[in-house]
Image (cartoon, rainbow, N blue to C red; front, side, top):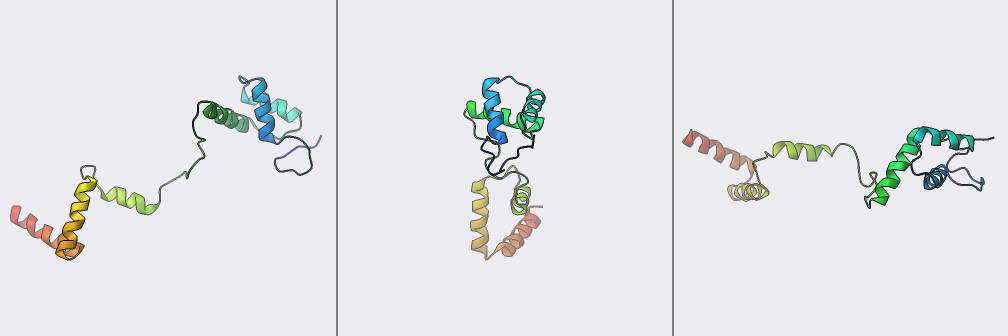
Length: 124
């Protein structure tokens, strides 16, 4: 019997995902490895990990949660990481806004840095 794969045209049967869903509807408590073996015997090229992933997806859907694959995954963009590293946990958004206004009043960030250095010398 030829192995069925997702996207195979003209098979006239279910995709792997549909087959897994159908079997899990029959037996929601089925373990991934035996279910994968059962589906392989039916001609589907299914691995236990795929069954496990589908079980978790169906569970999340039943609980009303969004799928884990929604949105971007992985590391945040470098600019966001740099911005997060620069901002101390003690600074609020309001403090940053005020610092931006001060820097604009003084003629730019370099001028604001000079003013802060002078302030440090006066107070230190």
